[in-house]
Structures are given as C-alpha cells and as structure tokens.
Length: 213
Image 1 (cartoon, rainbow, N blue to C red):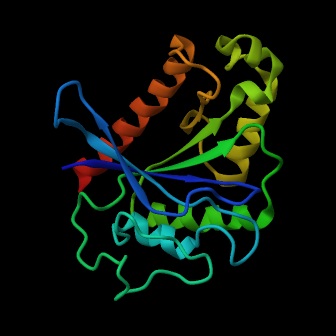
Image 2: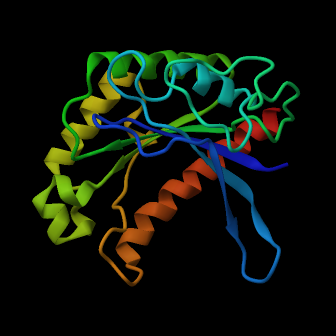
Image 3: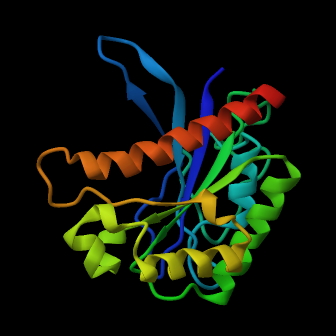
C-alpha cells in the first residue's frame, strides 16, 4: 500500500496549481519509487468562487478525486464527472493532510480560516492526521535568513507558529518550519535537515493511519 499525503496551501493571491497532481520520489536505480506519494492541490483563497472548493478537498481526502482532475472554483466535483473516482481503494485515500502556509504571508483572512476549519473537521472525522508546514521562514525573519539554525530561536517565528496554532487548533509540535529552495544551485544541509524532518513526520503519521486502515 502506498502512503499518500495531501498538501494544501493558503494564499492571498491567485493559486498557481490548477490540477490535482500526484508526485512520486524515485529511488536510485530504474523503475523503483518510495512507497509514498504527494498530492498537490489548488490553494485556498479568500472569498467564494476563488481557489479550491472545500468540497473538492474533502472528496480528495476520501480518494474520490482522480489524478489530473482540473479544479473548477465555481463548481464542485460530483459523482459521474470524468474526474470522480467512484470506487477508491485504500491507497487512493489520503493518509495525512498537510497545510502549507508562508511565514512571510499577511494575517490569514477569516474566510480562509473558516474553510481550513471545515477541512480539518472533515479530516478529523475520517481519522486522518494533520500537519502544517510554515514555509519561507528565511524571508520572514532576519536572524533566520542569516543563519537557518536560528529557526527555533526566533521569537518572531515562534509567535507566528503560536498564532497559527491558536487559529486552527494544530499543536505546535505539528507545525514544522521549512526554508524553500529558491536561488540555490547546490544542496544545503541546513535546508535539507528541516525538509527531511518534516518528511519524516509526514511518513510516520501516514504509516500510523495506514496501519489503522
């Protein structure tokens, strides 16, 4: 069985992701992939008719959204549509829900928070574990930009994580700071440490849920 993680982002601008896309990580050698996948989904946006619909995310949690489905902010996916999976397997279902929020973003709008709460409530009813990733931590804090190892010492980032935790009810130890690769042309061990720590927790949470299924 493949461990499946669903990554949903929040954005104040228009989401770049339009299609429900599955990503695999290839092992060294040909034809072999690690037994987990990431499903990227259109971001949540402020207001009605913008960004991914909460109905579609909830359907994705249940494994009912086919890979390659193009999101329509004005109309939800329904049974009978070409992108609807009427017979999802356990591997089609999401095993961990990951919310991605930029540390450099302005305060989250009430409508976006409400959408996130609805999605979290649906995931909780399904027993799906949930994590959050605080991205772009270097751009949000000068100390972290100078030295990424200051990420857990930053009072600004700690407050950002605390506010996010209070708004959504996600425990602080389930909110993981990450720096995005942007201008770098070589791997950076400090960047990789944060990314791999987040990945390790996603896999552990997903494995626990898969065992229950």
